[in-house]
Amino acid sequence: MKITEEAIQKKLAEVMDPEINISIIDLGLIYGVKMEKEKVTITMTLTTIGCPLISMIEGEIKNKLNEIGLTEDQVRIDLTFDPPWSMEKMTKKGKAMLGIT
Image 1 (cartoon, helix red, strand yellow):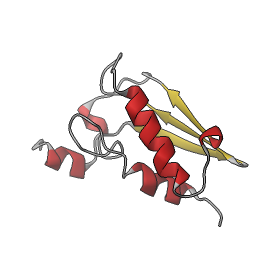
Image 2 (cartoon, one colour; image 1 turned 180 degrees about the horizontal axis):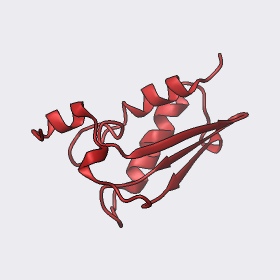
Image 3 (cartoon, one colour; image 1 turned 120 degrees about the vertical axis):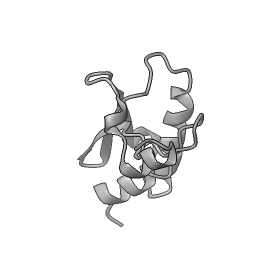
């Protein structure tokens, strides 16, 4: 089975922020997914610098991507704060879930 960016995005949408239970996709934390041969690099941010939950989120990302056949060694997570996260990065669904219009 060929792993596609669409399949990866779908799995990332299942990863929930542990504090507010909204997907990292709907929060706008995922800046990019890059596939190269058998490896995937996910560029992402957090809502705040120094968030203590990053290891939980990274673990859940790797667990979800394992469900489509990617091993932990095939997944690289690049954490960035450039550009910094803002509510404008959220999807309409994410904003609605938080009551933001």
